Length: 194
Image (cartoon, rainbow, N blue to C red; front, top):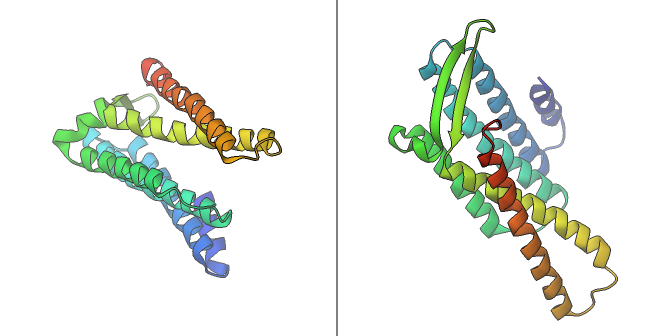
């Protein structure tokens, strides 16, 4: 419902790239929510699987255009290699999930079961290698951004020379990379979360 209201409000505003990106992110969010609702109330596992596949498409739309909106709104430079890697992983996930033989790369074990007492479909799954890589990249990007912001505030008056800035950046990367991978390993290693 919030996505629909957001789209209605954005249609009435002056159109530019920023509002377009936000409107497309809202459409992706709407697709995610509708597909999730369809997956919950599907009558057969095959119907739930189709809803999950469409939900992945909404995921790509929502997060891509949300990232583009934030970059455009804050007038930040795009990290093209990171975005390209992220998009390649997302489209690889989508392609492998839509292709029945390669779906094991996305979810190693995927089962749908009907819960009669609630009247919904339940999904049990274990993450595949592509999902682990995707969550690893997202965790790494998030933690690097947080650390960069924190280090930028703490050292803004200290760093004046390029070698010092490169040293602080290298230290930041050495801290962020293991933390991101540790988060993914903890998430995938916990049977209660998967």
